Length: 175
Image (cartoon, rainbow, N blue to C red; front, side, top):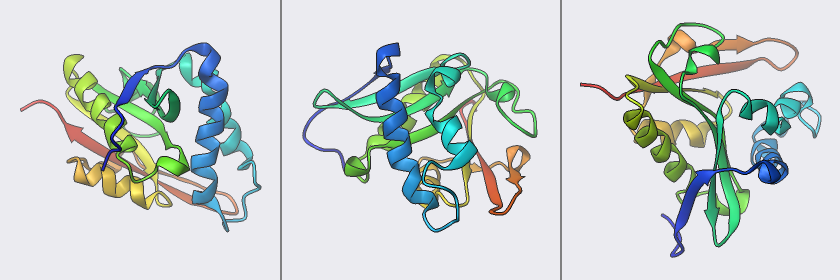
């Protein structure tokens, strides 16, 4: 349930990328506690902190509550270039959804995801797709609640000493 204050969803300004990176790490670090990853999450943490790199391929979207950035994601008009497997032709997508830990459970992730659904529909995309990991149980519940269905065609496995299963989800937007 959202707080009394209004959540504002908008594109991030370049000067806000540092805050987005910090918020993303604060949201993701607890998900991987006890997995053996270093505190900075190694190569994955470097990717999470690279907001400017994501901005070269996507729009960085933030959620503000009381003039504070409390959530973010990267919206891709064409997600096909982001996937490691499959070919989600005609699909928009988003990555790296993060909510400030102090605001989790308040509907911030839902508001950001709904923004993506509305934007993908306005863009005339056939579906909205995303990847998440097996560690992200709350995210999976959110996506299922909003009507996303498993989309294994874009799932994959990250190997190494701590293997991670990356799951695909898809929400059809056209009848």
